[in-house]
Image 1 (cartoon, rainbow, N blue to C red):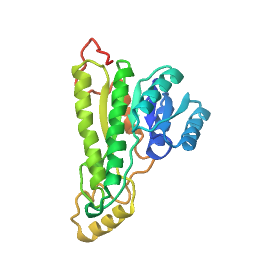
Image 2: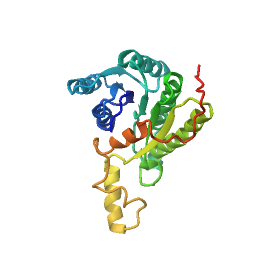
Image 3: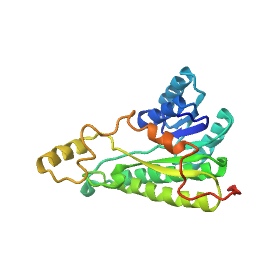
Image 4: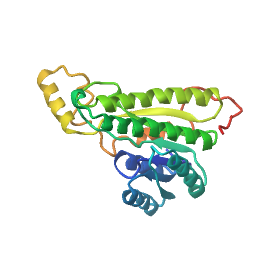
Length: 247
């Protein structure tokens, strides 16, 4: 699969984001990595460049609108275009509902929802017709297990946000596809305990999907964003023939 395009991957300095950046580069895309982790981000971009890809790094705190706008501008200036946004940046703070810290919940809301929304906003304003936005959610948005209430709520919101954004992109003729990927959750102490308990009881929701062999690894999901980013990928709502640029 070849993708001759220019992509911005948020949260691309490590983990799943870095894996998706590598997969895009391997498919022929030029890649800009945006992250708050400067040293790791520069290193990740350096690895892409060393492999022959056109790549760069931009400091990006997705909760700050100025950063989101600047990241798009740097992508356009450095790569020469902006065709793909992978809205990957996100955080998870695990806690049982009875123990949730409001500060942790607000932090997840800010990064996972506000950050994704700002990415969409500036992609719609700058992306040329034929572009694609891939929002990264989680299967945690669809199942229940202990200590992910806040995270699950924010990732559920990302799915709903994607649906509305896709409808707007189609109805208003932006010519941009918007899709959402639900990745497998990362391993955690709570997940391990829940899995062990589910094996004993045999009736925990989602235990067949979230097991020890299928929790998320950095290299586990990158091909899926490539499918969503292809120009042949379907759009949730068909775009009109005359794109309307957002100001």
